[in-house]
Image (cartoon, rainbow, N blue to C red; front, side):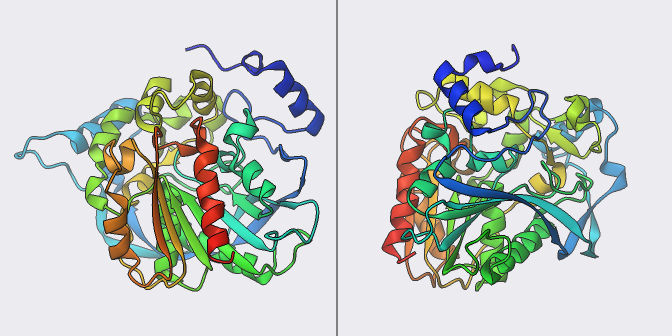
Length: 396
């Protein structure tokens, strides 16, 4: 596959990007701070100190690998069907309590014109595996793909951040990085936003909404369970509460995982616990659905992908039933491979009702002609409108 080049972006878009100073993630995968593609927004980048406390599973030293042959064997052990050969359990039977300080790279954007109807509602956005915070502000044809562009246009404010281990956030071993740590970090970020910290000139918001995509939705769901007062509404995208449909062995097989620090020079500082899928076509197979995407958008997503910790992947099961009482929206693409085995019709609502029985307003929505990477599909703004309509209908 040829590397993605700027020549693949239409000239008018290049001129727009140059005028409004939106740096791209470098072609080798290194993260670059950019400002924002929406001229009606005022944005500021933050480095936020966090102090997560969590109980963590421990990846066995015996299960770690030093090269791609070892990772391939680990993957094969988890995808085989021989009932007489059970894969070795990669985790110890004990857990450990962790209390470590990190920094989180984040960007806050609000409408330039203060006093817009919804600007005092802050949406706190968590991205999934394989992305950084730019998933919410895709600079390629932002009028089609940028969630941030759309919701700023509807008057909302957004804080979007890099998960621990990604982008400008602190790095930690991929064997250590996991759901429990990410959950504690998001809970702290939500508390900070609710207090008026890291919200630019907005100050204390009227409402705080948590939105996630994929693993970011799992993190959001976990916070709704452990800290039900953390948000006034939660939105789970690229997600299903039906854990039986999430076939991690199938996903591992489809991704053909490779060690990230051997894949791109920009990731050389990461340990062997950080992995990535093998190529563009593996990305398309698991994140996209024809005819709802363009090859240019898929190439852009592949060139800008980010690695993830193996324990993040293996710890990302459904958090289950919650006592959360606020509004809940669960959204998935009709052909989500990862959470619905490629068919989401009739799947979302029954499971969501089990996990959010106390929600004041529970809604599910299936976006047509869309795969798992919802924001990279040509009809993305359709489900963005579902999100803002849902917030408006609940007074947010």
